[in-house]
View 1: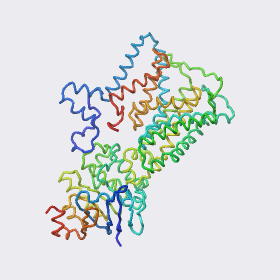
View 2: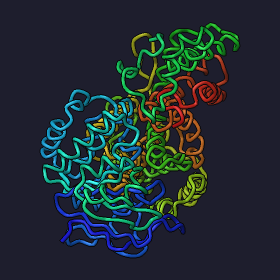
View 3: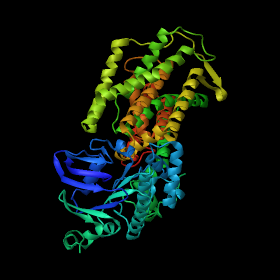
View 4: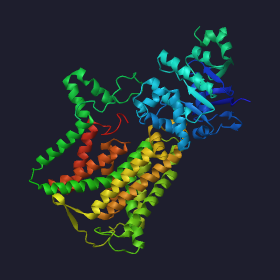
Length: 235
Length: 374
């Protein structure tokens, strides 16, 4: 049984339908990448999974729980964490305070242990723990955002365009960290513009277009599929 | 402190350019030397230090225009100390305003009414308690302290109830922020009418005809013991708010919600709970301010409205959304209001405070401690 199961959901904003009958699944320990052109509804799908938007039809389950109607803070309590694409750090708060808020539901003792875990993954954050997150560079902010989401030791991490706006070198570094995080047993569901690279590190992938499922399968087979390549991988 | 860009984090220029960098003011100052002297002067005038210097200069210019009557240093000092005390009371309201604005993003026009309800609640509690002996040099007895302890949670709950009845419904409907502001204006009238209905239009006093002698402090400063108590309590409460915001989970959650409400939810914070506690805290602080104000002045139903204006002025001067700014801004407003009495009819005190607020809005709309555009 998959860890996360998005079961034919239809949703959107106000009366504008963005997603139609979309289904995806994430198994335990997997990296799943969702790719697709701009406006395909990738970010909307992430928001729906995380309870920032509720499905009009269909359902979303995490483990054996129906989370379709959960609020984000209730979803976080189920240890699914989310890194939004933009505005993903508290700019007026220090790095350390950002991390502590990531572990908002934890006990004091657990917070300290979780902070150490994050600092191990991103040592630069420890050096800069007193710095206001708003004064940091794009790559460091992305580390703060991911670190905050990792504070709860999530079973599933949602990443919305983790490479957006970063230099190629930083993209490689962030992708490398995602693989490291996944190796500790955290399943990852990510949305990426950087389709080739993200499929290379993913186990499985989905192609979304016009708010509908278009292709799905093992990441490798998507990379090799000539039609996917022609339409969505720029090859 | 006058060197431009001195409070810039050391490595800001070194980091990669970040897309959401909104601290344009500091950046402008950093780039100023390359743009010539004119730009540099403009940047200096708009900087925090520049604005403070200007505010002080304007204040003294007005003093000179007012005839520069020879005023005894003694009197000026006394007025300044009174100003700090008025500032302390105003700060309790200003901090509440700034917290509500930070978390909910609307100016709460009914905040003055909460202050007034705090004063009247304290009055009601004192009316039912037996009048005890005076405490030391103060004019009040233990019943005032009891009234303070009762009024704070009561007004906190009133604020919470108003949120549940009005603002939460608006939030659930994703109403425009201007509707929140209008609703709070309506609420101000509603709450004031409640005071009229319960306590009537007459003035009330906590104590009738009690002597309240002034103490002689060093440098011939004359203040009442009550005023020192008010200042000490106001500063203690401000310190508690500071510790709450920086040290406790709920305080950090409040700051996070003010910073980015959606991200706060994403991080597992129940923002509705944060909002509820923000109302309780702001209401309690307003009640303390009202009760303390009542110790030195008469209670009247309109008092909330008259206090709202200088409280807003303090909030705006300090930078709306910044609790430290609210404290500093309220202090400036308090001191200016009182000290202008040295050369002007005291009735004009608030006007001077508002002139300074307007100067601030023209030169540095984000206030002393605010973020540009915020």
